[in-house]
Image (cartoon, rainbow, N blue to C red; front, side):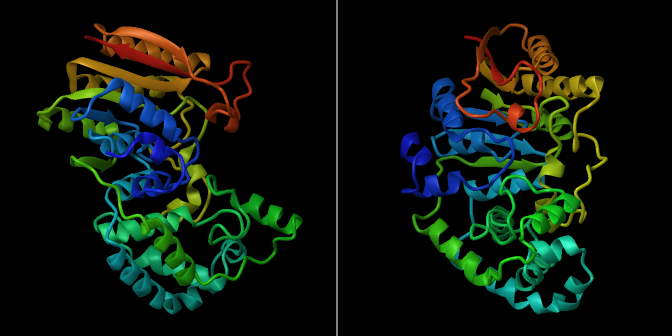
Length: 371
């Protein structure tokens, strides 16, 4: 079994090359995920993450000899998790890339009608290719299409030379009006001319150069709402979980769907950066709704855990988020012992990055153990 140090540091193994896939705003540090998995579980154990993000916790478990089940409501994170744990074959992927690229010219007229943002963000060749991928990839149901779409998402935007777009952050898509204003102000009026087929082919060759991750057990990577999926899973799952390892969304801090709006667009979403109105898909600004979300999810999780289990939750140190999370966990795991550890702050935490202006900065870990 490959060591976690080899996966976390460098790109010398298949596991390390696939582990880092998926730029995602406010994501679990990979070394943290491996550390917790190794410290609080053993090989053969079953790990549960109901707020899986890009599935770092589940990936760490799957390549370390554990079984796992993760759920994510955001399709961007779900695609990253599904693909890095079980990618399609390289040959099938390259064939599919060529098919999608050949169809790009069907969209020549379509791009002429698109908002100026897209014409400034992507050159015509890239934009036609993206429309072809958006229309033809069955990423929900086909692992080849899912793998290609996941890699397109990785490189959809970023610094010039590193992605398919004009100058932009890799992790977070800028709002439309802000982007246009910024590009003009900083003399990025024209997107770089890129051949998307050649660009992605090189990225695929590099990604597969060491093979694909090796896992001992089947891992479940589920796309959907934990509040709706967990009750059924609690009834059907005969095997109990040893470790619940997750980080719920923080109260009133970020809107993951706004942050990922451009990647959501290529998955078939709206062509704007406005917040979604669907429940649990926007910023949590209602305290009662936030409490209900955590309580419903952790209550269902409690029915799926072994009697002797560990609950490890990383959350925001700000008062309401922290106290609500602690209250809900104490209520649903009343027989577990509680230990509180302030997370190390060596770099900017997600609360700072996303705009925490309070005097309390950082994150905090709530660990509940029994047995």
